[in-house]
Length: 124
Image 1 (tube, rainbow, N blue to C red):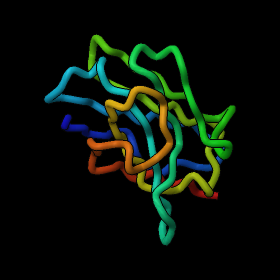
Image 2 (cartoon, rainbow, N blue to C red; image 1 turned 90 degrees about the vertical axis):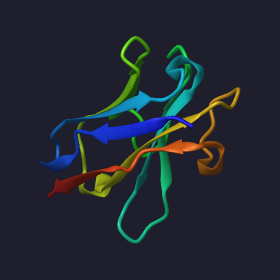
Image 3 (tube, helix red, strand yellow; image 1 turned 90 degrees about the horizontal axis):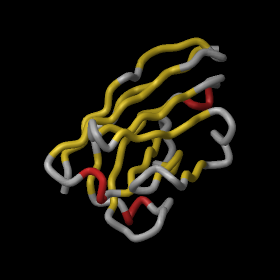
């Protein structure tokens, strides 16, 4: 399993932008599919975005499509989540996760490495 550390969370007004970053260590980063998930207060953890090993295929939850962008840098072992036009509904703890599954997946149980999460609060 890899060690994952998220950063970049904070308090932002609605409509603003925010970039979350996840630094990986303890594994060969380029062999992992990477994903972002989030958990809002009182709700279950949900899929946000995922990216294949070389970054050629992306997947987004409908709720963030067109506003968020996932990217990765295999030379730096990092994966970012660029959040634009944020809304109060985006308030959550955001988690970075890694899987060695063959194909992109949205299933939480498919991911075996997780970060501790970073808090994002969007004010209205």
